Amino acid sequence: MKKAPVNKIIQFSNVDGPGNRTAIFFQGCTFNCMFCHNPETINMCRSCGICVKSCPAGALSTGADGKVSWDSVKCVQCDTCIKLCPHDASPRVTWMSVEEVMQQIKRCAPYIDGITCSGGECTLQAGFMTELFAEATKLGKTCLIDSNGSFDFERDPEVLKNSLGVMLDVKAADRAWSETLISDPGDMVRKNLVFLKGIGKLFEVRTIIFPGRDAENEFTVRYVAEKIGDSCPYKIIRYRPFGVRERYQKLLGEDETDIEYAERYAQLARNLGASKAYVV
Ligand code: SF4
Ligand code: SF4
Image 1 (cartoon, rainbow, N blue to C red):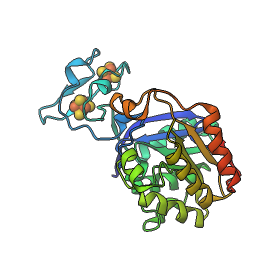
Image 2 (cartoon, rainbow, N blue to C red):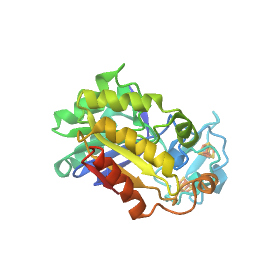
Image 3 (cartoon, rainbow, N blue to C red):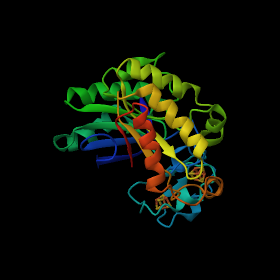
């Protein structure tokens, strides 16, 4: 039976797509974004054992096979383990089958519009998601993919079949800035932007605006706005340092982007034809 590593499931979310949605966050990511607010979702636990003894609830243990395991009943969600982990991982991951995730979705089905798969990077579990979306669609629920754009949707479009589309992060249009910011030149992200728009599966695009990065911000916003036009909403997101790893806060700055500065870029996007650009 196919299983996927689930970091958490939020039964009712109103920030992961339209309406009330169940959001499934998978463990593991393909990028290492400097500004990541959930860096503990980037890597899989390598059972180094560093966090085990510090768990105040005795919820972590190392088995005879050397693997660290987590007891969700004992866990008090204090986050000590993820603060201590030097590998941007978490021991609090549950390998779940499609049926097990569906059981949770069915419990809140009368109260949700749909489901959203996020992460980490959910497309690492594309096959799992394809099956999950087929089951959720049978329940009459809409399905959304929240992606960093590293997956080749054109080569493997099956996952899009039962989905409204992709909420796509376009963090940088310039290869060098992208390499600095997300540890990847971003070629696949930009390819997806064009491909998904072309097949009507671009649900939303998001770009983070960094304080003082005038040239980089403008280059990205211009690029996206000219590509998407008024085809979908364009979220201009203010950089917020809270939760960002300390070493990256030093590089990106400790100030959040002020609203007037971000609004400049939303206006630029609207002027270029992305009429659904707005600041969050
Ligand atoms: S969050 Fe981590 S450290 Fe805290 S109780 Fe749970 S497993 Fe233990
Ligand atoms: S969560 Fe991190 S610190 Fe804990 S065992 Fe896994 S890799 Fe080591």
